[in-house]
Image (cartoon, rainbow, N blue to C red):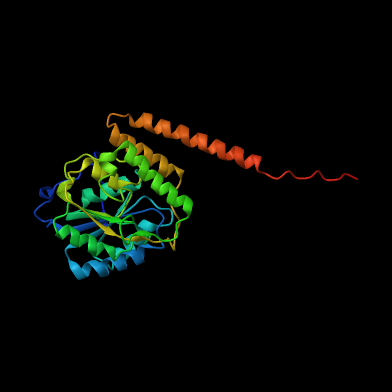
Length: 298
């Protein structure tokens, strides 16, 4: 087995403390998780850019961990090939679990860094912002978040509808869990760093892909810093955003607001909404189909 291939943790989603490492495992300063699904076209580029940047700051004191959800385009296999040229890179290939949030947590469970982080593999999160986030952590922040909603931040070419949905999702979060969502300007960001001791020993219970909500809701977070960035358009690969992600986001808000809410009940509720949405789209599609003229018989 390749030394770059990490085992997949099972069981509860708990982040171990630094004192859980063996004497042979010297803690690193930084562990960055890169969750992937069908990102084979971006893996080589993101790893190259990240290692170039972090080597300038903390050479040999960090690790990159790709957590792949059994991508059909061989993302995991390609990542293992890339790891041969980058000793800082480790790869976890999941078969029985899916979802960005749990992928990040499983990566953190195997990470050795005192500071933990997450970044998307699709290059929509500019890698160069990472050093600014790390500097905030050096200034004793518990959490450093890359934000689209402070001065200098933004989105590149989003449609009006996508902007509306993003802001609407944030407003909904402010209504359901204001004490969580209201702590940062961009609670839906998937690009941030945090101290291990802010979440170690805390049981995580996320749904979907907004892992920052889980950190804010369940972690011991006091000092928060933000860095502006402009969200980039994807140039390779395909977007994963669908109506299912929005439904999972609502489930996640509900869990944070009502911890005793049944997961099974929540999933059943979301499936009803999803099926209703599909039926509505099907009816509209049939309604809008052109009526073909009858052929003249001779």
